[in-house]
Length: 101
Image 1: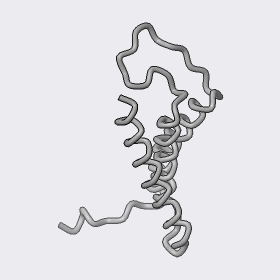
Image 2 (image 1 turned 90 degrees about the vertical axis):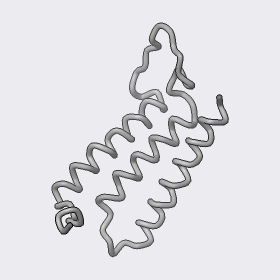
Image 3 (image 1 turned 180 degrees about the horizontal axis):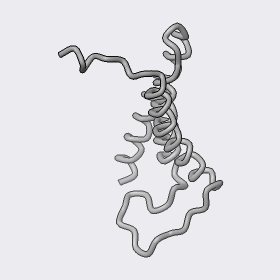
Image 4 (image 1 turned 180 degrees about the vertical axis):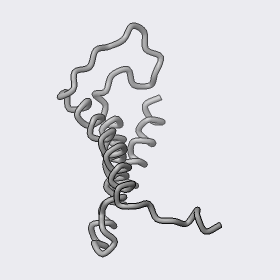
């Protein structure tokens, strides 16, 4: 089907970058303590506060995923660096989350 293979427009790629990269930046700022965080009552999650290195890894993953939409194709080395950073940070966050249980 031809319409599934269409490239997103420049505006669409920028919107995806702003949404995904912005969420990653918010996670990183939450980890760094720039965005205030209040603990809720009871917590049943693996991590009850955002000050774990796994949270930082997922923030970096989201930022790199957002950047992958706006990096031009002729910047191959930057694209490879972004992809490797995305892969390493995602695997580290995932393995760290399973290891913390």
